[in-house]
Image (tube, rainbow, N blue to C red; front, side, top):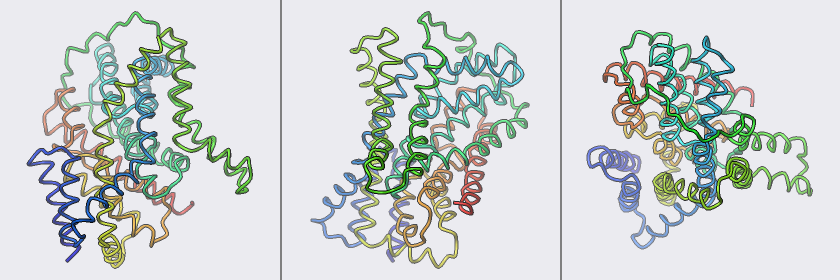
Length: 438
């Protein structure tokens, strides 16, 4: 009976998002209250359950998400992202423009949130299309696939970072494994798949026929690359360092753990960026702080979505239904990594949002993962891969791609939706292969 109640609540959640067009945070709260009442939690305990879930989820993530947003905003506003893209274009040359844009999308996508990276990359993609008279979808899709992969697989993006916290995974190891999984997924969904898309008719907006001219000097090449990639470099470095100095409770081990903690890494990276892309570029401190304030406004809804998902997760846990679902799923004889991927993929197909799909699936899978002794870092990646599966008409990314490239629904499904499905499928295969070795 409890399992049917959860399914009913998930259906109500989908209806609230799709048919009622309700705000996701409000929908999460309403469904959490409904689930709590139907699952037998006393009314006077519901608020406490929601508060605990929201607090536990946001408490460890707020600084990471906010600091990451500030860093990404400064990378974009300072021109560092444009410098990275221009440098890679010069480095790869005309013959490999597609690969240059893809690598640029991957590097830019690490510090930037998905929609910001999308809007930032589109003018560059279109300027290349017009200058060299190349097929639009063939050139543009790999770069946008790179943005999607970083959004779904790699911390400190909100969904992977939230999953790391929920599963008590290691952010540095998750990032390392994520890079291993992401590269083949990107190559197959990008340059390999796009070979079959050269014939798709596309008429990109003439708005981008001439690339924007900005007289302001761009940051230096080395400065741009190092600052944008600093969180990744620090997380990887401290993770490897912790393996070399693995004697617990020693002074150096404690300092390494402190230095490698995600909030510490993000704070240090932001301080470096404040000087390297802000003060050293003759930007007043007040202007830099305004950029940071704008960044916080941009991610308010993401924070609320993460919080709402935490509330629902806690209701399922407090009612005991999470353990019941976990016990029931054990009889299905499906590997937990595959089950997490499948759960996220189904929710993604229903609601469209990769972030909501990942966070909702995590709340349902967490008890089963603990019982099955699954590697938590790989669980993050498995659910992340599932959350990217089959983007269609209920996904904002689908419509961004369709409208910017002026495609029909049919061609958007054939290009964008298939690309996302390849990413999700190859991601799962990569996770299962990694599971044999780690």
